[in-house]
Image (cartoon, rainbow, N blue to C red; front, side, top):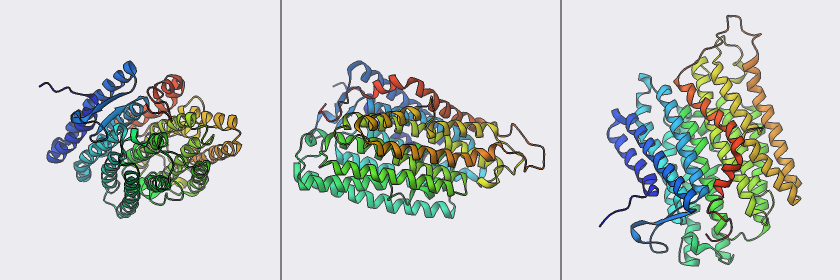
Length: 485
């Protein structure tokens, strides 16, 4: 009997076996990691070709489909998320080779690769899963690896941040699992197809509420964001890039998926989602303005930008969901690329000048100019300036809100944009001032292999804005939102 090899199976099991091998053979972990990433990226490219040719594709594992077995499914949106994970992960891994090369970082190198590959396993599993229990399992795999990456530096601050992250993750997982239980009691099945068209009964509304709060904890949506700034600010630069650029996107993706299949009980729920997003935009922006350290500023900006994605999702109410998800998806992709670039650039700046205190960035004669330029490019996309992908996402948000008459979301978006200009300007002022330096300025300090990865990501964040039309066409493949595929 012949066994057909599927790119969906390879996308999940190759990184899983790679994580095991990297743990067992720590001296060869980097080589195993890159070989795994190349194979996984090849599987994602193969899957993208299949989706372009045939639309959405599915695979019943072991020949047993839903509701008794497990189905995997790929469409334009899921493949776009797989591609985001592969590209960002590969470039972050290149940066990690340089930033974790010292003898004092041997322990970090030993555990970085198995944790990162385990994280990749969980993320790819989320993007291909078609039932909510499998989503729960994969989200927990992600959480396990993410907490490990958070504490990788071993500092006291990182350990405390990792502990807070673990508590939030465990509580969010319990809420999510309770919601899964309510769905099963009500419908007797957990696959997406079984959720389609279900009436919004009290049990399903309770399940939706529990699942949403659990996901809000995991994605750090205001006011449940308490764990994120410290976790992202105190992790190593490669870990921060993975946590902010990729990990929070998994929970955001699950929100989009469940909104496709589970019934929204009323317009009020989407309004609440938008208000929580608006709170994140304002509070995250204000805290970024007050942040004393560069990485902490970048972490607080993540809180604000996560909120903006939820505002995009709620931009035109329940009637507009069939289009609003696209604006949210574009912002997810833009944020994932630009934020990974920014955290890597912030790490390079800290490594070169020895600190990341914002008020003292202009006091050092050392100027890591390439890292500073990369940081500025990433900020262009996060602020939402043309021609970046972030601009396209924000424009889509405001265009849909204006068309639907929801002008308050336009106001929130503009306020968030002004706040982002203000807090990033604090950093740019330190980059551009030289009057407080009493020594020759080293204009070209900091050129290294670790600079190549964030610069590439930042250029992608800008360049993909020029390719927004084909990107949007691709994520629409096989994904008629709100309609059973």
